Length: 141
Image: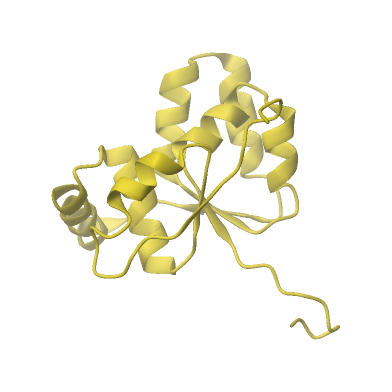
C-alpha cells in the first residue's frame, strides 16, 4: 500500500515483443504501459529498432524514455556483461531477450510480453524462476 492507502504498482520489465508493438505505433499496447512503472532493457530497445527500421519507430522508442514511469536498464560494465553471457548460456535466448531475462531476474520483476510461450520455455532456466504477464494485442479475442 502507498502512503495514501492506494495500491502500489510494481514495475514490469518490457520485452522485445512489447517494444516492437510500441515501435509500430500500436496505441493499445502503448496505452497499457502509460503510468505503469516499467523498466526497459536497452538491448530490447535495440531489437525493436532493428525490427522496425524507420525514423517513426525510433522516435516512438526514444519517446518512452521521456515518460516519468520508465527506467532504462543499460548494460554497464564487465560484471553485467558477464552476467548477461551467463543468462545466454543457461537459457539459449538471444542477447536481446537474455537482457530482458537478466534485468527481470535481478530486479525480481515480471516480464510484460505479447509472447508468453517464449518465456514459458525459459521460466525455470535461472536460479529463480522468471515471472511474466502476457497481454493480448488489441483486436485479439
